[in-house]
Length: 224
Image (cartoon, helix red, strand yellow):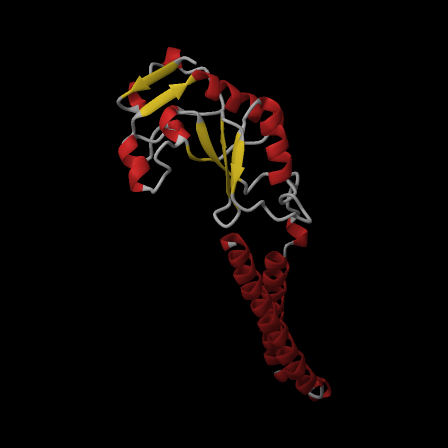
């Protein structure tokens, strides 16, 4: 079981790294930066990544003895040998992930549903922890990107309504002033124009309110 050890992940030669979906930095010890590369374990990790066709988020891989003690790891943790990985389940169905990992050749499994990750290692065969609860939906569906149609934008429609109503109200006011200076036969129209001006002002205010609401809602969605 070939093993390569370097004092820091930056010391790993590019020619020695052959696992395209992982970097030395994410496999190295989180506490010291040192790295122990077990090539068999890394080959299986890459094979698991290829089989699942989805990124593997590595929470923990190699741990130096001092870092293992600091995080409360088992005294004989496989992490210190570079043959164990803690993988986040955020983008995986735990049941499908475990089945794929077993098929690849991982033998040790630790379940950490509260922390959201699964431990896998090269063995011996064993398991511990509470199994992950069954999910009605394995993970959030990946939706294809869709071009946004500006004419369907709430912000654009609200702003457009506000702008048009504001211009209309200003135009009515000008027309009202012009009619006030004309013949007395047109004078009865002036009060109706005043009412129209206020209606357009109300529409403008509603449009502004819609625009503000749309902006706030879009901002909130972006924070989730």
